[in-house]
Length: 199
View 1 (cartoon, rainbow, N blue to C red):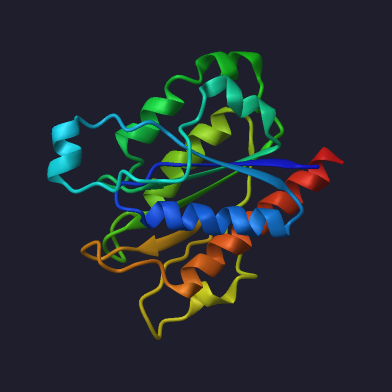
View 2 (cartoon, rainbow, N blue to C red):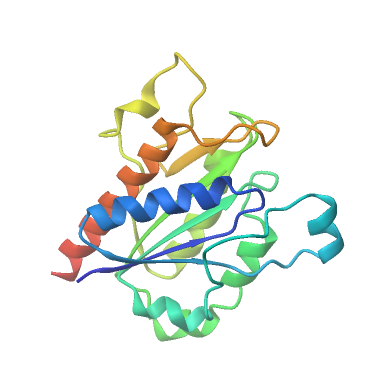
């Protein structure tokens, strides 16, 4: 069975919800799925003052070597000024040994994100994640236009051909059904692609 890792960082729970939806989609695509998060690196006083969400059902990833055990890795993180946050970057900065072994070459990767505004850097954040995956030799699968809900202009909704997205507003807006469905769609496509490449 194809093994998929959904690896995420979430400050306020939006990306955590998207991670669960991505995992649902990957399972629907026939994969065995693990959801892991990266460690919080912000000082505890910042976490408390900013009211970060600290309760979660998902364990912290064991370490970078765990990545090699998966056929696909789908990475989710919110934006920080148009790029992935330091918490996620800090994890990928520890993967040099995995890179040296070529342990992820030929595996499938994807990315998903959230921003507060429609034009808050979704695509540049996705690319900041995808760049790491490409350096590891991974084949990238985005949110293709087979998912039609990302194409409308009738309402505020996330979505990008580079990966599933959601818009958080001031933090009170939660991922909408179209955005969660986009995450499921991308997760399923990645699982199916990984199964084909695994052959």
